[in-house]
Amino acid sequence: MMKRLGMIGLLLWSVAGLARADEAAQIRLRDPSASVFGGRPAVWRLDVDGPAAFEGTVAWNLAVSGGVIARREARVAVRPGESAPVDIEVDLPDVREGIIAEGRLQMALRDERGEVLAELEHPLFVFGANPAAFRLEWLRGLEMSVYDPEGRTAERLEELGWPFRRIPNLSALETLGTHVLLVGEGISLRSARGLMGSMVRAAERGGRVVMLAPADGSFPPPGSGDDAVSPESLQFHDKAYVQRLDKRLDTPPLRSVFRLGGQRTGPVVSVESAGGWAFMEARWPGGGALLLCGCGLLETWEASPTPRFLLMRMLRQATLEKEKEP
Image 1 (cartoon, rainbow, N blue to C red):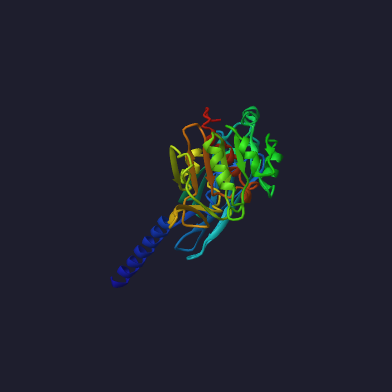
Image 2 (image 1 turned 90 degrees about the horizontal axis):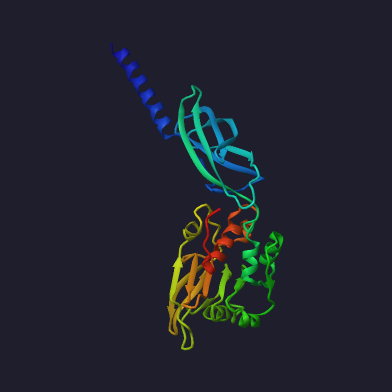
């Protein structure tokens, strides 16, 4: 009798252990990025975890615009305390220029009996290569000037065929008027001492100014000083501002942040590597705007559509241009 009770107890312990293993098994995406280029290969890397050793399969399917474009299975062997890697590789279809297609990656972890231990669903968006498709006339109307001493930002815009003129020095900002100025990524405000003052004065006169990830430096907040024109709004935003501009975009890595503090001479905004805001946005009554972005766009320009589409969204935000989403 005691032997039978012992066997029953062992069986119940084993079943409970399996149930706990089933409940705790999980699939995780190493990089939950949702923005991908159409017409290119895409790779999603998974980690499969479980408290008990087992072998099974990860079955997945990828749908774009409502139709399944790929469906496969991958064998997986899980060991306690270790993540088993699984790679999902797909050649994504082209999307028409100006169209952003919705997609969905569905994954299921099954044991040898075919029972589902864990599931994961990942929404995604498939972008074309050029966010200015069908918008070149709008870009021409901006009469955009680019100040980019290093030339790396301007080079990317030239590759996309965006219309703009490069300005070699800050004196050209005096005649910006209500047009757009884009300041290239990585400029040191510590070295280019007159740059921020010139940008603010251009915005005070009605110019729309976008600056990408300055390297370092500090400056008084817009509106400081006896002769300054106070902005009607001055806001600092965290990195979630990217999704407020467009919920389909990922957040690029932060290259710099903006920290509001004070010195004996008054308030100051400093450019830091961490511990601050990802964006600063100031607006003036005459339509002028100054938008500072701390995201590093050039680092992932080719790996993700987010940098170029975020740049387009920031230009639209600076000019308050609204239209139906593509």
